[in-house]
Amino acid sequence: MKNLINFVLDFFRLKILYHAGALSFSFIMSIVPLILGAGFFLHMFLENKIDNYIYHFSAVFPDFTNKIIKDISYLEQKRLKAGIIGALVSLYFSTGFIKDLDYAIALMWDKKEAKRIEFMYFLYLMFFVVVFTGGSVYLFYISLVFKHLNLPLEFTKNLSYLLFFTVFFYSVYSIFIPSKNIRKIYVLAVSTVESLALLLLKYVITVYISHLLIKSIVYASLWLIIAFLIWIDWLMASLLLGARALFYIHKSLANNLY
Image 1 (spheres, rainbow, N blue to C red):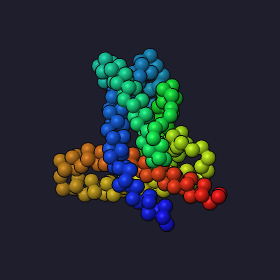
Image 2: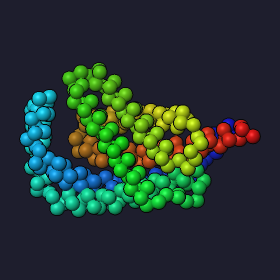
Image 3: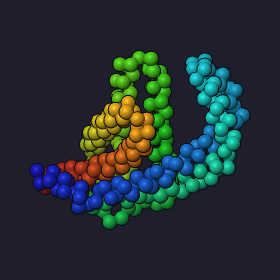
Image 4: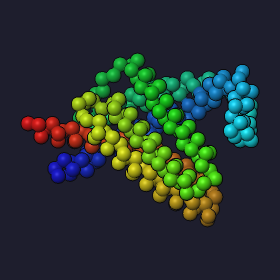
């Protein structure tokens, strides 16, 4: 009970919202130029093989694939310079985001500083991008496959979101938690609870924006931007709260051993 009370009070004592806001800013500074950088690499990827990819994807999604790939290729041919700059800027800020995330989680474990070497930050960045991008592509694929089936679509999408965020949280904690002695089952449990909370928040935001959309598309558009910022901030706050919860679980288990 004492640990639970301390956990609630730590939300204010450790200034979790402040650190979540700082992480959110760092994340947004990474993701915006990342879009330009991804466009540049996508153009390089499609430049000489676009006909081959169109042929294969068209066999599954003929109209959709043909239109999207051609449009992307055309747009990115016009934005090569922006893509190169975006890729470099994104790499700089993304590395900074990983450092900030490492430092913030270390604070949640009462550590004064994070101890990672620069090369490891780069590896963590690559892993972060792979997990996040892979999950996003998977969710996009699920939306396409089940777009004509309303009930299976909703269930599958929600299950996919839950799986994606659970894997995301679990991966981040497995890398950045200072102690390697904590059992993975606790990491998985905390990750699942956080994912359910985010899924609930997503549902509330979606319902509210749908309600605004009926009244005014201007209000709905404005709230889409606000909702995105709230979502990122809550995502980062959830990461830190989960890290603190794991700290108390680890501390409680360690005390029970003596």
